[in-house]
Every structure is written in C-alpha cells, then in structure tokens.
Image 1 (tube, rainbow, N blue to C red):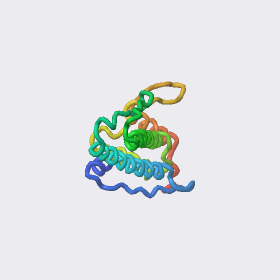
Image 2 (image 1 turned 135 degrees about the horizontal axis):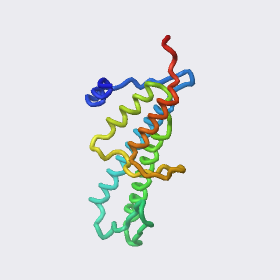
Image 3 (image 1 turned 180 degrees about the horizontal axis):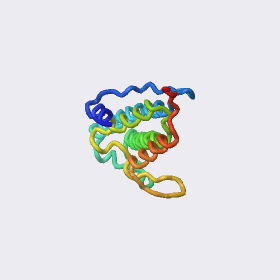
Image 4 (image 1 turned 180 degrees about the vertical axis):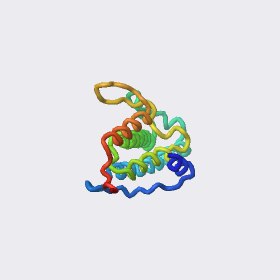
Length: 167
C-alpha cells in the first residue's frame, strides 16, 4: 500500500501493461481516451482564451453553458459563438470520459493500479475530477467522481481480476 502511495506521490510510473487471458484490460483504453480528451479540452481553452484577447468585449456577449439555454447575441463575432459551443462540447467530452473511468471495470491488477495512479496523478490542482455526478440508476444519488471511482474499484476487487494464478 505504501509503495502505491509513494509511487503516485513521487510520480513513479506504475506498469500499465494489463493483459489477462481475456485480452487487454479495457480500463487502459479508457485512461488513454481521457488523456486525449483532456488534451483537446486544453487546446480548446487556449483557443477560447486567445479569442477573448482578440475580439472586443462588445462582440463576445454570447454565452453557452450546461445550466441554461444558449444565450446568443446576433451581433457577436461568429468565431466567439463557435468557440463557446466548442468549449462546452469539450467540457462535456471530458466529463463523459471521466465517467467512463468509473463505469469500465478494470480486469487486471495492473489495470486497477493504472486507474488508481492516473486518478491521483491527473488531479494536479484538486479540481480536475467532476464533483457532482448523478448515479443514473435506481439509487438516484449525486456524489463526487471519487465516490463512483471507489465503487468501481470495490466491484473490481469483489468480482476478482482476471489474473493468471501464480501457483
């Protein structure tokens, strides 16, 4: 246990080759997808920020967010409106990819360790993971991403990992 924690804290890579008799651990692909989606989100944030500097305030009044209907000002620069929509789409894609990490069960010990290591090392500022997610099942609960991650890890450990026997 201490080795896992110290490896994550020091940034030491935990081996990520997770292959069982059933094939590659699907969580590894989900981790890679999340990495790629985060890169796209970062690029979109950069483009949006550049437009904030380039377009005058009076030409960027439109707002697109997940909580309200689009507020579009017809006289806004079309690049701003497109950027607002693209930014929301990128944030949605990141949330979906983060949720997949809680939904896809690791099938190998290395996959499970890779998931836990990624969960720790990805969150550089304490705000990288979604905070209020709905379970989407009969429980109808709202919890943090970490709660659903722990559920996924518990299920993986309870159901067993497809590791070959060492005996």
